[in-house]
Image 1 (spheres, rainbow, N blue to C red):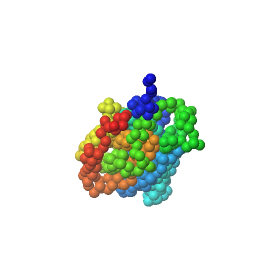
Image 2 (cartoon, rainbow, N blue to C red; image 1 turned 180 degrees about the vertical axis):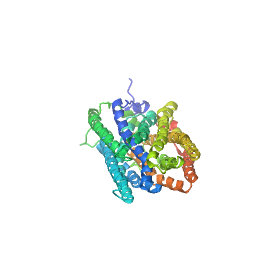
Image 3 (tube, rainbow, N blue to C red; image 1 turned 120 degrees about the horizontal axis):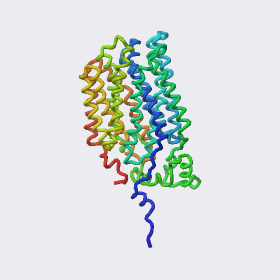
Image 4 (cartoon, rainbow, N blue to C red; image 1 turned 90 degrees about the horizontal axis):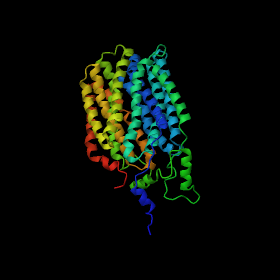
Length: 468
């Protein structure tokens, strides 16, 4: 008499069944990431000109972002863990509220400063204070978006899925610099982009509230092998999940949960930065992220100097925006074209990314005109466009589906850590010697390549659907 194989064996031998996130939901996630990215890069394209108009040293303009970045490092993991209890949608909404409030208040205080109503010192201090609202509350959105996508994507497809989400951020970095010069309008002047993107943020928040279904974390009750006698049964929980999310059906997550259980260490608590499973990806993200942040911090000032625009700050917004836009287009090319076309895994994307990023950085160091600056920055951005989704997906694949919220919080925290001091450090080294700055960025890229070559998990192992 034939007997059915044990349930766990069936699960371990089958490929996890997954349904793609609907197009409408993906568009909403795109809107969340695109809005914040476009607003931030629009701000970065005008801040060198604002600093010049206020007669503030370049380094102090870069340091004004540091407190916000430090808060991002601290708060991102906290919001990520909270999303496991409150749901992803609530944290996305909180992040947008932080972005809207920060952009509005920063624009207001900069307008006062440019009009001479307050001193440059108080303008900079208040800007840093209001910018910190983005680091405090804005850090809630990216880990929530990443966790939402990662928890609904099979392992073999996760690099491409997270690359697609990263590309929504990349698209925002194209739109921001492109629109920033158009938003420099009479009455608002250089602070026009702040006001415009605060309004766009409000529209995105309303769309998120109205169109994305309320959700509860799928894994809040999956931390124990057995239910308590008085607890909600597994079938009841699945039924409730399907009521809240019509894409979730019986068996959608069962196979992968079984595989995750085989991968997860026997003693597993809250994830930390130095958790052995994600440690190599954290190191790669920190070093490579600092290289990218240093380059981004000094590029605007480099363009002003090479184009001899220090004497006309308003005219500098256009060329700076053009160079940043070229880099953003290259980032999109990496994430929409190169990674899907070549089917790159996390290790390949990370290593190729830092190699190309380092080469582009050296080319930027010798670029002399606007065309050469845009091309060199585009090459560097192409590399970093491969690198970021590479280590993001590597960290995601290193942990179980139930740990995606915490893993995305760590990744977001790493991103924030790179912007605490690295932009100001890049500008400081640039003020001493251009080659100090460019050599430091290229050196960090080389270090990531050397360390990652031996430490990062091979792609065929990271993306496999069965435990080895």
